[in-house]
Length: 253
Image 1 (cartoon, rainbow, N blue to C red):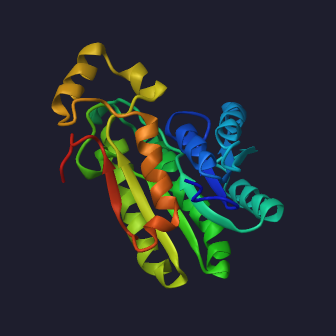
Image 2 (image 1 turned 90 degrees about the vertical axis):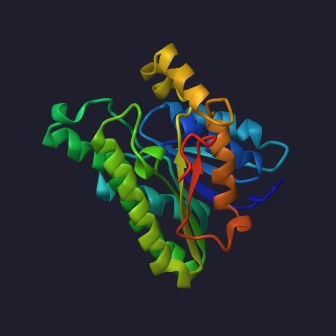
Image 3 (image 1 turned 135 degrees about the vertical axis):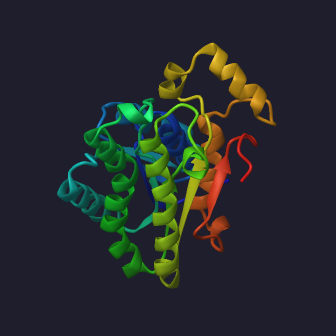
């Protein structure tokens, strides 16, 4: 499929894991994927994505993004628009977790979790929404988690709270900007075999998760990337304000 041929999409947090898989998938369907991250691994993502997109006309470009710098976020988005024109989709993959029990979490840790998981999406949306309103179209895909739908089996309550807040942000933006032909949806992955999660899970935890999952397997970044590509495409043109669970049936809400 070449659903994104000639279209520019931005993927934040593209340095690895789900962000990398999403950039590669989008490029493989013909997109020019702007691979944004603070880490140099974004360059490797862009190389992989460009390779995946060769036969479909896709390509990828690495770009620096420090999500903790509000003015820097705005400048980075404006630079992409100047260089490549209309932005068809924004995929907000930046985020992180911290496996701490409630009573060990201080104010700083709580605030930092919201900085990365909620305000990261807030800042990129606010930087790009005026552009999408002007062009009267756009797709935004935010990242929540099964933790935001239920509770986390690995991370602390500050993670679950921040991911629940992403769902609230997504619903509000969907209602407000729907009249501008802008679709805003979210993805809520369960346990996914990213390097960060694999480092946190013991073999016993992984096996318990697998056996508790109706489909009998733990998801991969590519499983999530397929859903991202759908939500970023015109196939999802009548879908907005929705959070799609990608967890193999582990959570059925």
